[in-house]
Image (cartoon, rainbow, N blue to C red; front, side, top):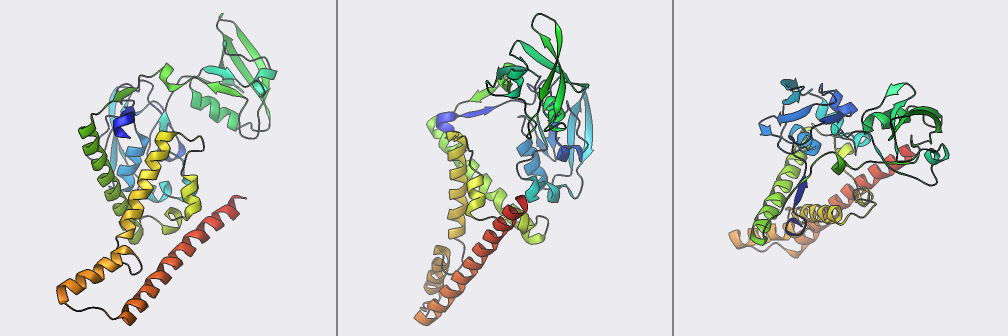
Length: 324
């Protein structure tokens, strides 16, 4: 994947509009327009909310340094933020996103916007009296008036200002497509040769596994609740992008494969790691475990695995019930 696609990112320096802060990020004290310079001891050279969250959750970073209007501000990470980020109901949420200027790239021919004669020569500057400069501001304003009518002020390419009343659906949408990030921000693409790709890919796999082991350590210590982090095959299915982005698909497949391979090597009876453990015992002691002993421990290992599977499946079922 690294050899074929390389690595695409927006550098912190090139994120000239800074971030749009979500509710979780606000709890740290982040503000729209900030740029995270460092988290803990890690410098953030690439704009990445995921990396910031990882350092907070996995490596227990205690502070962030952000660039706010040209000044460096130090922010303390709340002690309970990890438990809030890892809650199941916050799955899919981020601390912050790229802040992108407002712009309409397309209009859905079946949406409500086109019924009000809105087209791509216009741009939204106000929704129900709220000034709109960036895409996230427009989304937040529309969500507040779901299933209602929005008073929208727009400017045309000619410079004229017009007013429209547009129906907002139950998802807070009016049927427009927003300008892509690439229109305003420069993306960097780093390509790697074959040998370098193998080395980098291996390093990424090792780092991923190390982070997961640290996360399991936090689960056992109680810093991360098991009920918020465990899931069955149904949770795995929701991790894949419904749009079938091949890069995301293969990245997720590789991550799951690494985790399954690791678990299979754990010294648990009924798994390959369990058999290796008994073979090592035989090599070291010169004694062969009896068939009866192997049968009993295999049953115990199988029961433990089934109990864990039932627990994870039960969590997914309870989540589904609460969702509906």
